[in-house]
Length: 245
Image (cartoon, rainbow, N blue to C red; front, side, top):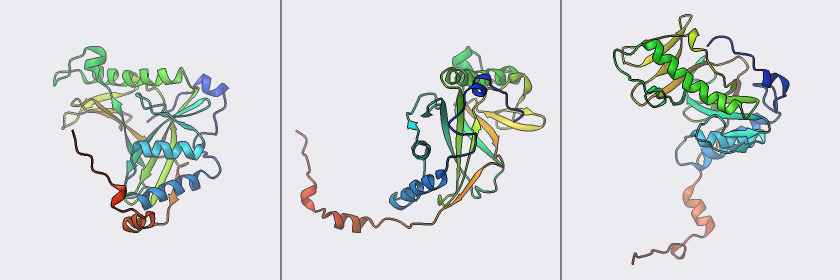
């Protein structure tokens, strides 16, 4: 993805903790919450908002979902967006694809998108839409990060890492359409972005850093629904059928 830019505001004001150096007890706090989900949910799944809440609880931040999705979690002068990615081997994967919003040049610029569109012009517009979102959040918070959870199917193997949420210089990337008609952004023979004209979905391809946190969880099994219902003493008097008038 290239070198990350230095940000003056971020250099002057200390973040809650250094990038990727999670607070003491963080892994345990995350692990306990995910074990609870594995035990209590009928299906083994962990979606975006659940991960946002889990991470916010683990670092003592406030969970406040936003339309932009880059500042759903806030702690003092730092804001986070949060992403989840499923992978069969979370500890060893080297790259992840992060779905990062819908960037529509048709809406934002009035551009036309077709087979004759200049891919570099279109790609620059896609990146500038992203950059505008990032700039709006950075105007409010000196530190803006994305925290990524790579999860196995059973949620028992996890990798967690943070990256700075940054702007990208459109001049550094070459864009071309692939065989599926999607637009790809490349730099130094490395695939960095994908944009889908149908639906305008923008994906950032991010390298997993060496500072990643790998976590293994013990399988708690599944809650016995019938036993819980019996323990609560639930009977027919708990259920009332209301006939519509």
